[in-house]
Image (cartoon, rainbow, N blue to C red; front, top):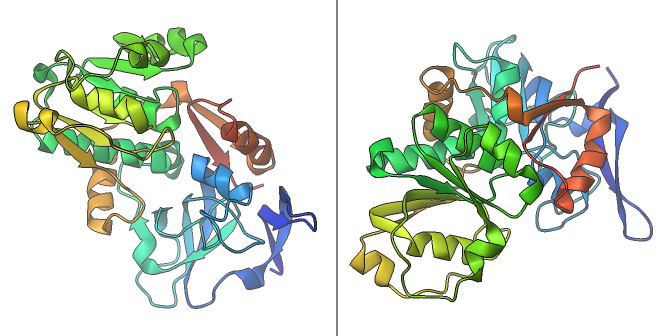
Length: 330
């Protein structure tokens, strides 16, 4: 094998970037790492940024994007994984400064690899992907901080994105009441169809004059956007409530007084799945294979590699929703 198929992001002479399905030379694969034949990947916002040439995500080009991969081990020089083993790779530097999973093959260190748990298929693992894994870590953090379904509703921001929708479906599967915040009014009906109990328009949510505290409304929250939305969610928690913070697309500043923490005992639970220890990742993947076997078909669209560049361009301008499962084998 001299080449393999994959998405290839390269820089043009005029400083623009182009991502296309290409024949990639096998010498980009690192011989002393684990070689995996990728059967499925998925699309994430980081992939869209990388494929657009964003230097904060990927420093060197040409490059293969893709922060998710699931497939079969071809060879492991260190002998940790047997050939034929089914594995999942998410996060770490995959698809960022190391060539990623939107290709037929990938080579990675063994410390990035999770063995696929029994009861979970490779296809389902990439329906979940980094977005679902992050949602799972957020829900687990809420549970470990005592936020159970009988405590009251959980609010989810950025509800139409992959992380938001995975959070909604998992919370509903576990018996929680869910309130969704979104700026996409045209998707209110769809969100209701997947189980959202109450919808809040983002502009209306943020229109109220800023206060030190708002009336208590939520037992907990999963915030995927940051900024003012996150701050108001935090100020609206019931006593002892927690918000799992997973995103920052709407802002990184946290300007608020200490009142929510002192007067209501609220907590911020920082969630970052990419560099989480393998033990934590394995714990969450194991849950997905057993007690968290929630359906994803309503929010997942299946595509082939050649369709991915156009969809990632749409991601950058907020024109997508849900999850995209990518079949990487032709």
